[in-house]
Image (cartoon, rainbow, N blue to C red; front, side, top):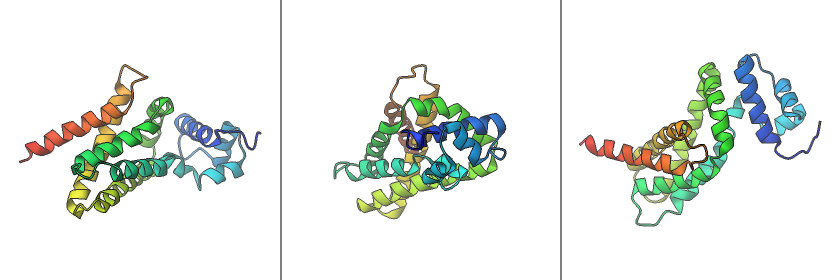
Length: 191
C-alpha cells in the first residue's frame, strides 16, 4: 500500500460509499474501507475519526465557503443576496465526484439510521455557519436564522435538480440560485 499517495481522503470516501452500498453501513469496517481505498487504517484515522464521519467529508470546507461568500457580499446586499453569494462560493467545490457519488450516498443514507442522523447534523452545521456569518453582518437572529434555513433548503433543492439534470457538466450554482429564487417567491406568497 502506498502510504503517502495523493487523494487518499477522496479514495476513502469513494471506497466507503461503495462498501456502504454493497454490504450496508453496519457491516462495513474501517479496515475494509482502508483496504478498498489502498491505504492503511492509520491513514484512515488521520483523515476521519470514524466511518460515520465520512459522510461529513467536505462539511468544514462547505461551511467555510458559505461563510466567506456571505461575509464578502456587498454591504448593501439583502440577507438572501448574501446567502446567494455563499451558495455561489460553495458551488465551486461541487464537481463530477459529487454527481457520481450522490445516488449511492443517498441509498446508503436511506438504509442507515446512523447515517441519517449524521446527515441531519451536517445540515445543522451548515445552517449554523450561515447564521453566524449573517449575524456578523449585523442581521438580527430571527432574520439570520430564516435566511440561513432558506439557504440550506435552496442548497438541497438545487443539489437535487443538479443531479437530475440531463447535462452532467452543468455547474451547480445556477440550480442552487434558481431554488433560492423559488423559495423567495414562495416566502412572499405567505403574506
